[in-house]
Image 1 (cartoon, rainbow, N blue to C red):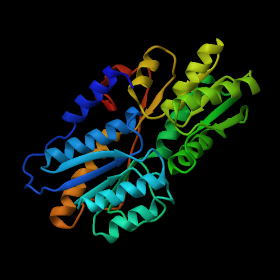
Image 2: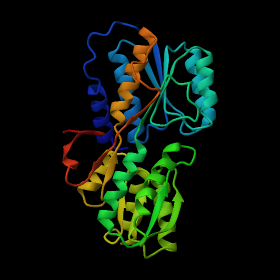
Image 3: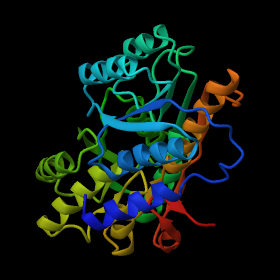
Image 4: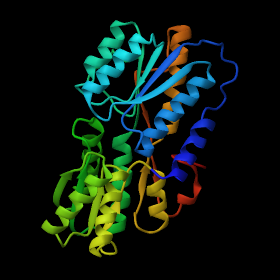
Length: 316
C-alpha cells in the first residue's frame, strides 16, 4: 500500500464516525481482528472500527489473522485474556472460525462479525456484510455491457474458505448464463491477492489467448490481472472488472485500465458494528432487527469515479 493511500485511509477512518454525541461513557477494550491490513479494504475496516470505538469512549486495538484460523484463535485468546468488552471480527473461515467465536461467547464477550459470515447463527450478536449477491449481479451486468455478449472469458476466484467468494461467483453466473454465447474458458483461485491474480492471469492467458474479458471476485486480483495483461500487450483487447471499490481500483478506472468496481460499504458497516457493540454493552440489545445484516453495494465506473470523496466513500 502506498504512503499516500495509507494517509488517505487513515484520514477517512478518523472522520468516519458521524453523529456520535450523546453517548454515555462505557469504557473498556474493544478488540478488532481483521484479515490483512496490507489490503486497503481491510485496513479501512480496522481503522474505521478503531476510530469509532475511541469516539465512543473505549480503547481499541487492531490485529490481523491473515486468513489463518490458528492465528485467529490465538488472537481471540488474547482478547479474552485482556478482558475485552467486545470483539469485532472479520472471520478467517466460514466453518473454521466458529470455534473461535464460541470461545469468546463462553467467556461472555459479545462478538460482532464484519465483512464475512460464519456458518452458524446465534453465536455472534451481529453479522454485518455487503450484499454480495446484489453487488455481483450489478457488476456482471456492467461487465457484459463492456465486453459484449459473445466470446470467451475467464474468472478469478477469491479464497474458497470465505463464503463471499462463492456468493460473488454465483452472482456472476446468474447473470452470465443469460448469454449463451459468453463462454467461461477458465477459472483460477487467486485468494483475493494481487500477486496471485497476476500469476494466475499469466497462466490463463497462455491457456486461453483468445479471451475478451476477465471477471474478478475482488479488486486486488483484478489489478493483478491488469498488470499481466499490460505486460502481454493485451489490455486493450481484454476488459477487466473488479469488486471492492478500493483506491487503486478507482485510479485504474479513471485511467481506463479497469472497466468498473463494485463498492462495498466497508466504512459504513465497520462503524455500525462498533455502534451495535456499544448499544449491546449498555442495553443488552444491538438495536438491529436481525443478526445478519446486508448492506447494498454500488457500481463505480468512469462516470462516477470522481465522486469518491474518501477511500470506500462515494458522495451522492
